Length: 310
Image (cartoon, rainbow, N blue to C red; front, side):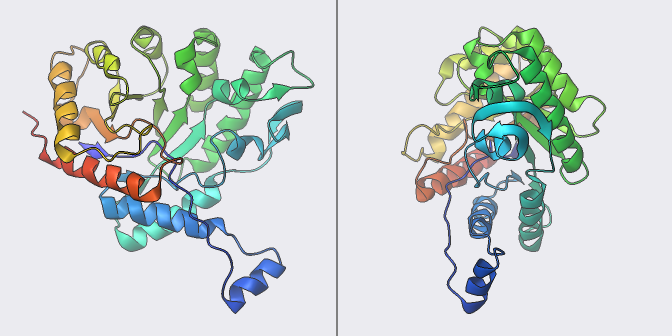
């Protein structure tokens, strides 16, 4: 089973110290987030993660995208939403450069925040009726489609984060159509991350045009029920990112084994369990102390290695 992350990592900034750094800063060329990306990448590799992220260090999952699209002023919608230029590509390429220098086998995933989740998190002041306006959702999807097109030649997996879907606030048909706009015809494996309670909506999630569904199981044991019905590969969240305690290897291992036992009875899986499951944390780790985040990843990787797949 491959190990991965949901995305974000604690942000460690480094102010300019050297003379060269200070000169770069004067000319607006110093990027204080480069060190945060380096730390995120190196920690993930040191922990043993197979498919890493760039750490999503430049802001929360919504503002990373709204500040890079036309039509937004911060988290306010002031006009028609449109793509301007790639938002995450630069950091993905930087993360890949660092990763390849450390371990050529490590892969970097692309991550975008889904159209419904972005729409749900902004205040509409112009052009659209409100943040549930399907035209807003679709325009965000069209912009994200161009973002995906910029990433497709550089990453093997692109994850779409749609946590809002577990709340029932958005129509599933609209949400599904929006995701279809993003992924249609793109030759990359797509995952969709939905945290929260999903055991009542798994039939709807199975209809989305992605090959991996990623959910939280450590902080939400009831979600284990979906493993009998899921029709995609599984992103198995097995460490609780809401608490600052580092779970033991045995604790994580026990949860993974419990999930695999259920999956053995799933009639929809056409591949072996090893090929059907990605092991990862429940959600992003941005708000955790960095030593706790690293400890969770390290123990998660160790636990996944100890699990025997029959």
